[in-house]
Image (cartoon, rainbow, N blue to C red; front, top):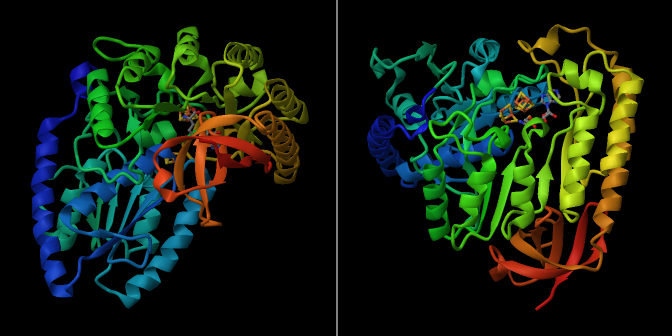
Length: 487
Ligand code: SAH
Ligand code: SF4
Ligand code: F3S
């Protein structure tokens, strides 16, 4: 793939702006009839990348005249799905049942489904068979064509021109998902959920094919955006009031390798650091196999890169890691994590762990526990292995559920124990916090994040939201703190 393919595709962007204009007229008509703006609800089911996609969908909806609401009983509801584990899929099917009753009461309601689940043929078949009330199904690669598809949903799918590629009509449902794309179209409207922070896609897709994981199949091959375009986007965000960015990719450490002028992730960070007015930089996710010494140096010397690294371990057993196709072993992971701890002592290291991968024994789990003890993760997401059809691990012999549950509990309790110990370490310190929102449980409190991603609640004026203030971390509550603002 050459670098031109990774530049924003201006022809496509212009085409979508034409559909945005057409859709505006449709929405104007609806508003005139209803004597109010039609409402739209966009639900995110997946990861940060999925959440960023939802902001793009909301951006288009807002720009054509919808009012965005949180209530799913809306004139248009969009489910942006995730398929990383089976329970994510089941959640969507369950919630669709509820949507169908809303639609019975409001027959003009439109329902759209997109995201990683809708990249899977068997999901589409199931939706067509049992969920025929869904109006629009589109995938991850053609998300930027949302305005175009939605226009035909409102104008009647029978009006869709025959020359639009890869569109199928089943009953009244418009279906379009592509298996692959080399196009990047980032210059469409985006409705940011937070005015002071934003995700920024630096790359799409994944080439790693970990043997349990569906992501490479539903998100396609790895493609990096040109550094200049990323920098320009961040500069614009900063002009618009953003002080923290989260650079997004399935494996940010391999960023830039396939560009015409290759550039390392560490070098990209150096360039982002220079953007005036930007105060905090985060990124997600780091694959241990590609994390360079150069990157550790850049984090260490930076004033803006937050001291938090999400470094998925998946398993501590070298045998299981091999079968997972992770390309590192227990020793390599330990060397790396302990080097990072030595070089940047106040960094928090969080991780993902899968328990119950095919063939995993109690001894393999002992290895995982050993790594948890040695690295002392600041937090860990622990998952029970979930079979994903089409991945190599789905064909391996699966483990007994009861055994897996027992192993999962062993991992979970150690992870919680070490995380609590780590969080305690900052007790009494006064540290900068980015104030994020009013606390949902107790509105007298505000909620913010430390550089190391720990959450702190404290009393304060809501005017502080979006600012960085110093907070004394007084009381450790397990995984978070109660603190007070220090002038
Ligand atoms: N690109 C990221 C992870 C994306 S998916 C990375 O490589 O680190 C987020 C997490 O979901 C993974 O880290 C893994 O722990 C978990 N996961 C992925 N597939 C899974 C499966 N089939 N069963 C259980 N957990 C899974
Ligand atoms: Fe999935 Fe592995 Fe790619 Fe992460 S690196 S998205 S776990 S295949
Ligand atoms: Fe889920 Fe897709 Fe993200 S499968 S975890 S929403 S990349």
